[in-house]
Structures are given as structure tokens and as C-alpha cells.
Image (cartoon, rainbow, N blue to C red):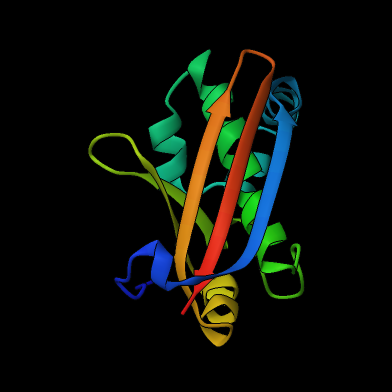
Length: 137
């Protein structure tokens, strides 16, 4: 989703979302449901980036939290027509996370003039957390 290239101080906050996830919960869902769970929630690029255990589950959990935080910031949750893969977390060359919207989530954000998405993610061995701020002009 292309965004207006304006400094954050020239934008207004549209919404803020935060989410925390137990890494063990994501690990258990992944082990229990395997590819069915992972391919429903994550894009191919996200799964490739997350690599193998043990860092895999920390990264998956952080991305799950970022997806949830994005939907909270939009104020929609996962409503009709939206899917988990519509919110994709990519990493820049230096590893900074960025959110790219697709499908119904992208359409909704465009309708509501979202011009910037700012994300911060972190994790410990037990928890992953993400905070998302959506801005509009």
C-alpha cells in the first residue's frame, strides 16, 4: 500500500493498537495444526523470514501480535472479507519491521485515508508484543 511521504508531525493519529502474545501459544498452534495454521495466518514471505526453531516461534508470535495490533488500530478486528494475510510484516534490509497491507484491509485503510503505519515489535522467550500507530493526513 503506497503511503503519502509526509513527516509524522504533519499527520494525525488515526488509531493505536497493541497486542501481546504468549510464544508458547503460537508454537502449540503451529505444532498442532502445522501448515494449515501457518498458511492461514502468515504469508509465504513471512514464513520464509521466520526460519527455523527456536527463533521461528518468537518471530511468528511477534508478527501475530503486529497483525492483531494493526486490526485494533483500524478499529475493525478481523471483520468480513479481511484475512490474516492481508496484514503482512516485512523487514527492511537492516531488519526494521514494516507493515504492508493487502486485500480488504488495504481497501479499508485507503477508504479511511491511512497515510502511514508505524510498528514496533519485541519479544522475550515467553512473550511477543507489538504496537502499531496508524496516521492519516
